Amino acid sequence: MIKKDIVDLPLHGGKCPSWLFEKMVRLSRAILLLVYMEFGREELLRRISDPFWFQALGCLLGFDWHSSGLTTTVGGALKEALSPYFKEIGIYLCGGKGKRALQTPQEIEFWGEKHALPLETQYLITLSRLTARIDNHALQDGFKLYFHLFIFSKEGSWAVVQQGMDETTAYARRYHWYSKNTVDLCEEPHTGILSPIKRKEVLNLVAKESKAVQNSLVALIRENPAKILKEVSLQNYLIFKKDHELSLRDLTYKNLKKVLEITYENPPSEFKELLLTSGLGAKTLRALTLTAELIYNVRASREDPVCYAYAHGGKDGHPYRLNRKLYETTLRELEEIISKVKISHSEKLELFRKLPYIF
Image (cartoon, rainbow, N blue to C red; front, side):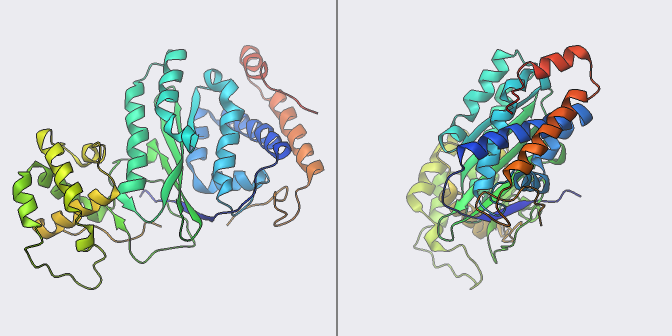
């Protein structure tokens, strides 16, 4: 059975000191290369996609153990640590925070062309867009995405680590995906959920219980727009149960009319195609969902699909002040282990040709 993992983290102010980020890059590089050398790239990809492993790695690197900054800073450190080794280890990290997240498609295409990778980069770009749209639109839990890290191997395996912020509570929620654990992108797709916050009601269109709604939405889009708009006209009197979170306020008539007219000309054949429709945002999807529930007598899931080690201390002094001497000792020992790993001489030269030792 596939589980789901999401990590909720509070927003912290401040910035990662340059000296700490430099050490985080070095230590994460040593750890990731060791995992790759010992277990291979698929296991490395799997571990990065594991929310428990990712969180523990952030704690090991000395960043704020319970801060939203752990995701963005550790993600940035991993990308910088492995970028000189993309070709050698066959794993690529694209995207990041804010504007870097928007550049993910260009980065995927760039690395695919530069290293002449034997895979369909356009398919990976679509996966990147779809996973973001699912966590932003199909799973409406109050967290708006601002960080998107897309990782893929030269064989085509992939993983996603992305994070959204709830501005009203200043909490962040992290989402993890892994291709080997994702049977259906639109049905229970995440690699798991770990969270101290479980909301009473969210709109979860990728829950197993929402499959009938997905099918109804696709059928709805194929109907004549005039017929649908007449059904949801405010001339009708609609009665809702008190526990029904979706209401008439979600029936944004103008947006609904626009998306119906666009999709009717070229209707999607399945739910994931609908999610990729240009102009289809969270509000319009809510309106479509309510319309489908009213017309087809189906119901979307309202269930919210919803702990670490310390080795060197934390940036902000919790659970104790970061121990620089111990941190440097760990770095030296790991880098020495890497130099002794039993791999072919040519592979070792390729990997260590770019490995910076800063003592």
